[in-house]
Every structure is written in C-alpha cells, then in structure tokens.
Length: 276
Length: 276
Image (tube, rainbow over the protein chains, first blue to last red):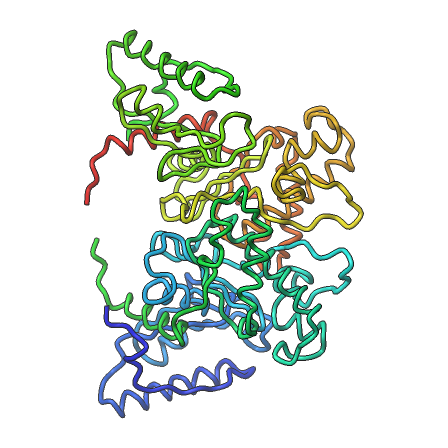
C-alpha cells in the first residue's frame, strides 16, 4: 500500500459556501491546474465529505448546510475531472485511515469518533466499514439527560440527542461561547457526563478494542482522561472485565490528517482490480 | 451447508440449576447415550450459552446466575465428550442462524435482539459476528428515562440501563406481575417508549438493513408495530431517509429455534478446514 500523509504534493483550502456548483467548479479547476503543473492526469479522486451521504450514488442527502441539500457530489466531480471518484463521509475516511495506519491497527472492531461542531463516528469491523441501510449516525443516539438540566438541545432534527447535548455546537448554544473559551468547571463536568454516556453506549454496542476520539472539543487538556474515568464508572468494573482498561480503549487519533489519508485510501481502492 | 432445524434427531431439556458441574455431567451423559443409541461418535459440539462469556477460553465470566460465575464451559464439555466444542452466546448463535437461514439473509448489517428476562443482541457485519474486546452487551446501554418515572431499574449492575428499564425482569419488578399478565395501557406505552429508544440507538450505531426482534416480551400482539411507529418518530423522517421504512427493518425472527440452529452452525465451522 502506497498511501501515506507523506505522499501529499499539494494542498489548498476553500470555504464550501452555500453554492455547491461554484465550489465544485473551483475544486475541478484546482485539480486541472495540478494536472498541468505535474504533467500527469488524475487516476482517481477520493472525497472525504461532510454527510449525510447516500454512498450508492455519492450524493449528499438531507443536510442543514445551506444550499447543499441533495448535491450529487460524485457525479459532478467525475464529470468535471473525467476520472473515477470515490466518496465517503469524513469520519468513515478517518476511521479507515486510523485503522490502516494509525490508532486502530490490528483491531477487529475499531471506532473513530469526532466531537466538533457535531458528533460523528465511523466503525471498522473485520477490516470493513460498517455500512448497511446507510452510514452510521452515532451522534443522533439518545442518552439520559440530567433531571435538573432543562436545555432543549441544539440538534435541528432531534433536539437533545447526543450531538444536541454534547457537541461543540451544543456547548456554544448553551453557554454562548466557544468551547475553547469555556472555563466553568460545572459546565465541563456535565460535558464529561454526556460524552461518557454516549461512549458507554458505543462500547456496549460494538465492544471495540479501541476508539480514537478526536475533534475540537477533545483538544481540551485532560478531557479524554476524565471521560475514560467516568466510562469506567458507568460500565462497572464488576460486569465488564475491561472496565479497568478503559484508558487503553479510549485513545487519541494517531494521524494528523486522517480524513485526507482516508480519502487517498478510498481513491486507491478504485484503482485496484478486484481479486475475486 | 447442511445445517437446518430439520436435521435435529433428539432433544432434551434440563434446568441449569446452581450446580454447573452436575449440570454438565448430565449434558455429557445425555450425549454419550445418543452416541450409543445412534452408533456414531460426536464430531463436534456447538453451545449457545447464556453470557457473559469469554469467547477466547469459552468460559462464563461474571454472571449473577447463582453458581455459574467463572465456569470453564468449553473446557469441561470438551474433556467430558472428547470432541471439539464451540461456545458462543445464545444471541450470537441466533444472529448467525437468522443471518444464514432466516430473517437476515443477504443483509450486510444485521442485528438479532431478544427482550425476555434480560435484553441481549448479536450483530453480524459482512457475514461475521461483531466481536472485539468481548461480545456486545447492548442491553446495558443507557437510554433516557422519563422525568416522571422514578423506577430505580432492575439491572443488578447498572440499575436503570436499557435492560433495567425495559426487560421482562424490569416489567416484573416494576408491576409485580409477569409481562403476559400486564394489561395497563399506560404501562405498555412506557414500555414502547423504552424499547423504541434502545432500538433507535442501535439503528443510529449500526444502520442495519434488518433487526429481528424476539423474546418473550415481543409475544405481545401489536408490540412490534407500536415500537416501529415510535422509532420512526424518534429518528424523524426528515433526517433518516429510511424512517418511513422502519416497518421493513424491524421484523419478527424467521426461525423457531434460532439458538439451536446457530449452535449447529458454530459446531459445523469447527469441522471445516480453513480455506486459507
């Protein structure tokens, strides 16, 4: 396998904005410029996209992101660039990359979880992304809200689902400041509780050997350790043999740009002929 | 594949009791009797057991079932019978069987859920049982409890986890009668809510094409349909494209004795030489 973050020869960053057609035109033009500059045609393109996505058609489905509802991402990029295009969610790409090259190497069951503006996760089981009726939407599970917490939640679809209670957007809506500026220890105690409840549910459901927890909210010093301690308490050492090993299960991602590496991996898969 | 419920030539039922050694002796003697009667030696034994199990050693781990804590099930049966023994949880065996021959045929992601005395589930992804740090313990996830519900829950480990709020044992502890005798419509409304919350979390986590829901509690006429309607509401049709198709995802198990068929399947796997 040739994919690694070291093989990246050029990077650029655009805001996605509210005009998918214009944004995709910029993407296509940028890649055409690289083709001329490197005197090489694109073999394949991998896209690690925000979701939700229909992976069969490579289309963004229902999204609150202004303008992007029902955008046929794969179709338009393939038409513009004239090469095969693989599309998956950003968290699925990160999960694939961390499993292949980072924190999840060797795990039969591995999860990548990000807590940023929203909460998203991807699961790799026996080397394959879990994908059934659609891709996982783990951020929208329901967790117990504290009885004295009357916050309605920030999720536009479900109110006080996990993402609605514990994402960066939830913190921003509740405390009217960015997570990085939030210092009230009671606010973080509640955040630890809600993060731990969701992680507990993922452990009960998947029994992963490892979960890599990334995203802006986890940049807070000590948060991962506090969440791990609370998860141990919720699982109870008596019942789950591994409760005392939670600190080994809950880890920081290894790769600096797992989404990009994962996009390269799904592009590479397009170029390998099936072996059976 | 030769396994089917039609191939069963003899059955017997013992209570497990509180004496694992005596129970396993009875099991061994019964199989030895069959060997003499059929003039054929056992090739392999498959065991669909209550859990929790350590599948590496085939040992029952920490269980509230009196006397069975840390019983080396596989080792003792293999010694007594002199043949290879495969052990898995009852729900994992049911999940395998329903996936191979029943309600889950053809699903990339399939769950088997039973709501009886406890709540247990097995997951099959890409044809393999999900097994990482251990087997899933989906019944022990946490779900939101109604604010006006002060029931402490019946789970000896976690109190008001999903199993502690919604299992047959939870109903029996709360209403002091068996689920079959419970008629109060408000009691069943609450049960529908709690079952639907857990099923919603499983759908968010795995996005299965199908979940087969069995066990004593689901013998109640109409319960599965009511749970499906509530799950649709919780997922919101707007966000999850399949919300209107929940009735196709949540189905009744197909096989009458999926645990036994699954035990035959894991025994059969022991007798097939690995192909690579």
